[in-house]
Amino acid sequence: MIILLSLLILCSVILISFSLLPFFVQKIQSWQYQKEAVLAKEMDKMFYDKSPKSIVMLYYVLPFVFGGAGYVLMQSPVFMILGVIVGVAIPNFILKARYKARISKFNDQLLDAINMLSSCIKGGLSLLQGLEVLVEEMPVPMNQELGLVVRENKMGIPLEECLKRLEKRMNIDELGLVVNALLVARETGGELPKVFSRLTVTIRDNRKLRESIKTLTLQGRMQGAIMSFLPIVFVVWVLSVNKHHFDIMLNSDLGRMLIIIAVVLQVVGMVLIKMFSTIKV
Image (cartoon, rainbow, N blue to C red; front, side, top):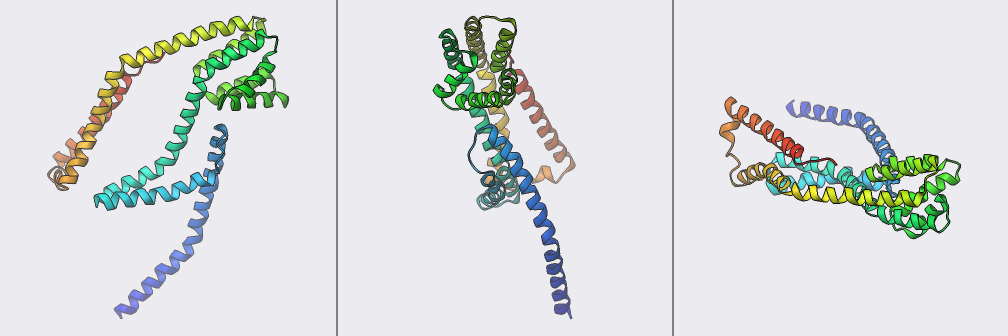
């Protein structure tokens, strides 16, 4: 009788699972299509020629890989959960890292682009013709972004609007300064070579100031990073040596309260150190 009841329960569970399977598959496919659409827009902004499906597949594969590795290496479900979280976060981290690297590279090429554009205008070319020269001569990503500006203008969009779109895409303060100076000079009839010369001096001074601030705040940032990760490394090391070391605190109300207070104070300390060591120019 017990065996028959167990078989009936097992069959019921299997039937329910098969009946719910299409619903979950539909939800997963819907999420995948939405994620691919979002990733396609982000990758288009970076001129990234990979397929969004290859990035979405990482969301399926990496959680299992890192979760399994965390459980096998540490023999703990806590590290398995942490591995799953890390696996889910890695694709977003990769895209953000690529985007930041692209922005940084574009910013590094900005002064060269301004100088070359100034030389083109001194040689008798118009602003649009100077931008076309930059598209041919400048490396990636400058030529890609300016090439998009030129193509948008040829499609009928005013050059001022194209430059504003470029500023919005890249979201760089120095580029915003250049675009605003260009727009003002075009409206007031100012001499663009002189405007570019002043912009070059201003941007170089700003970069020198930022480098000086980074140098002066380096010690504080290093101390903040060390003090932020030191407790985490200590806990991981202690658990690897003795898994039951913190049981006396986890099994009492006072111990749990102290752990919560310690975590809250640690987070508050990290935020304060970040605030104190960050100076905006």
